[in-house]
Image 1 (cartoon, rainbow, N blue to C red):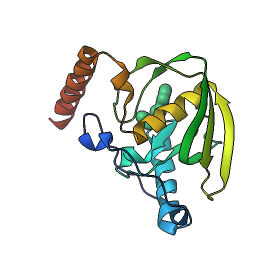
Image 2: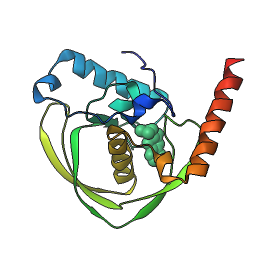
Image 3: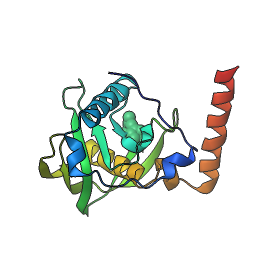
Image 4: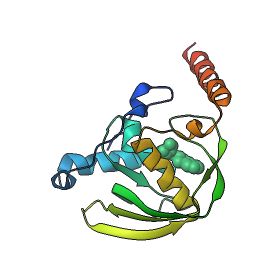
Length: 171
Ligand code: GNR
Ligand code: NI
């Protein structure tokens, strides 16, 4: 297994709209290895989700584990939100926008369809943190970041703060 580099805002590659995964690719050993590498990268960060877009793979899948003890690894391939209900506000962070946290309003409950890592189809109703995370990751697949929900002024402040952090880290 290996750790993958994570793209960071404002990298334009994070704006790519990801294409659906072809069913035949799911059984490919290279694809299964990529999933394992994404879990390793996510757990090491540490994070609760990682979209393929963040590791410069522009296909529609992500890995998620919202458990306290890394006991619930879940793969969502070609996820689709079929219905949304209610609202929740959650203070979000993102591995592609390190050190920045901001409140985002999203649906409280979603119905989602997806394929698991074996290519088996599922449909589930989810809420709370898992619903937040799925919506955050699907945004990545559509080239969208949580800072896009902030005002342009705040987003510019985030960009400057990250540039400064990188400059300090480089010296
Ligand atoms: O690790 C993560 N935590 C998190 C917290 C609140 C809302 C969303 C997330 S997802 C994030 C990992 C990440 O960047 N996934 O794309
Ligand atoms: Ni993210």
